[in-house]
Image (cartoon, rainbow, N blue to C red):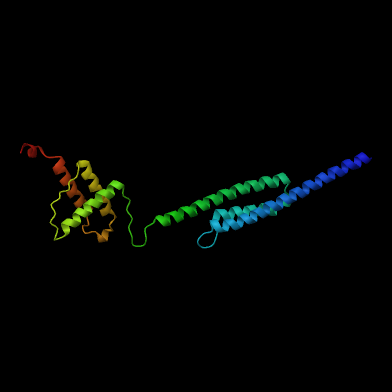
Length: 204
């Protein structure tokens, strides 16, 4: 009789401990979710003040799991919570990536009224000395005799491409020549006439 009572008390104590443990776990998870929701608002919030649709849906589904915990077993409740946490984590990750990507695009975008051009180091060097040479020859008081020449056909072609990049980003209404191919053909003709002479020129 005493042994039976002890066994019964032991079973009841274990059951009660499991119940309190599970209740504490649920309360801990719910508190963690509330704290996470505050963090989500600061990291995923859109410019208008709301949350992305995917994050809102995941949070609503997680709250629904919390509300129906009494109708689920402990294992079923944990499995449902874990599944929704995975969905929420995926939604938060996507929202943070999109927000960070948008900020990065805005930072890289040129200021209002400015135009940005991507140039390699060689193109910058080409344009630098071409601009300097052009500036000198545009000045009425320039009397220099130094001679600058391209090192070869490839060098000239690279300079022509760099100039073409600058011309291409000029807005159409501001271009001094509407047809960009006019200048391009002129540069290519100079290159071809020098590095690819005709047979008649060779014989002369």
